[in-house]
Picture 1 (cartoon, rainbow, N blue to C red):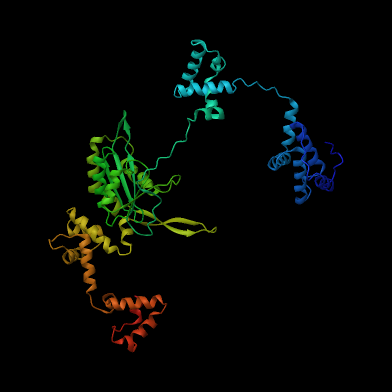
Picture 2: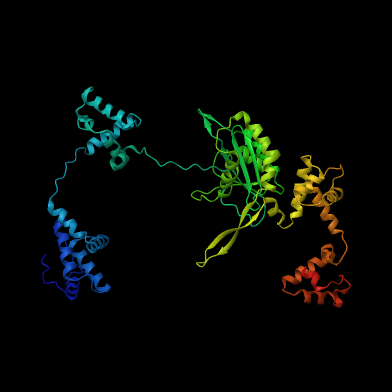
Length: 483
């Protein structure tokens, strides 16, 4: 088609209006179409015209060349990047192309042989194709028997004809293990969220050494370390129960990586008996278990080293941990704790500016006395004297003796949970203004109701002294409501 007279946008619009109902078919080659697009874009100064006119040019190119809208957009993009001209130069060079040797007939024979032989490796398949031609005298296999091993894999992976004929290759389904929830625990300032990891103590002549089991609480950094000969149900489950029992607070969450030593049904059953929730690390989130992994290096590797320790010494190492090491790292080893702050860009950062032992951090918890009673029970169970317990817990001997005397069980044994329950009952029976609300359930409900209606403590006390409620409740002052 002669389009030399079309030199402006108006000419194009007139051309398109005149041919709106006519379909144009062209027998031009790919090279001629590319040349036409290149000349048109340069002649009309495509880069400088308005967006509305650019759409008109695209419609014009579609009409003349027969290309789709997406193809025209791709060619214009290539022209903008200077690659359309390079494509024309390649066409002009008339490159020598190698003839296709393995056509549909040969690929069909390859797929048929592969399927019959149950998909052997490339070398075995090539040898079988050669035997088909030379031993069994099948002329159909003459060409395909000359194929290289690497090209067999090329056809297996890239040939749509081969893949449709065989339908052998399928994607591997991911393994979904229904044990533990894949998420990062959020302790919200509460103790009892444990992180656990294993540390292997080297090999010697192919023989494995002992395994250290390290458990750390996320909030207090309270740590319990143990040692086993091998990672198996026989050794691991009793040790885990022992280590969990050493923590002076109720365990809420047990978090590990995705290793099979902790993601198994034996550990799951043990945690279910203890009413502990199990979670595991997320994929591509390396910081999920970073706390305990950092402790592996700064505590276990630093004090125990990296040299090989034979399995026969596992019990001795574990005894050392339980009798001396765990006491040292929790009561005497200072740890750093982070403080969150917001930088100039509004991002939350951490600054490690607080240095405390895990026990000192533990004492700063809200209702720490509840947890300290359990810790005292653990120390007494380990046959420590009241004086030794007082030194470890930071109290006087007299305070510890008074606590044991007041809160021990009927069989003269001090138990942490029972001792705290006894303490709460005694507090409920206590007299004084500070206990009026706590001892009177009706008064407590009335104050809660008025607070939900956004009454101030002064207004609530005024209502209580009113004639309507004067006979129903005891009189209280507004500081009591604030407390």
